[in-house]
Image (cartoon, rainbow, N blue to C red; front, side, top):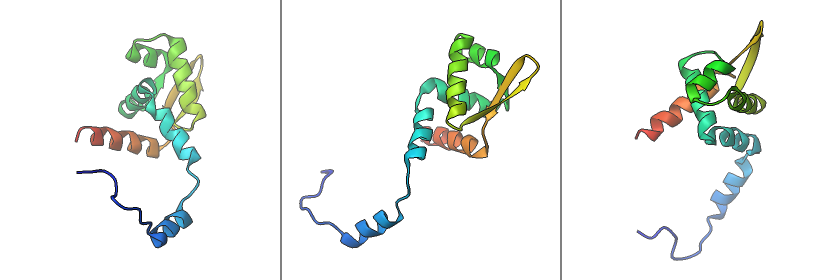
Length: 113
């Protein structure tokens, strides 16, 4: 099946309806870009399994240095996907909220189809 139309015919009503309802999506794009990196996705998936992990835990899970894990965790935090809490000398990370959990799980389930 050919993937393009054989003629050009714009449905003006549909175009205007969509344009009128199209929100600003730059924040959504940044959110999804943050998850598009496989290492950051692994971290967020790990945080769906274990509610909170310290940088050392994440580094051990990924098989990377703590500097690499810290870099990715900071990126996730800066982009609103993770949050952190200091307990003594340790900093624990968790998912920012249930929406992040749901998006990661939905994406994972969809990838299995």
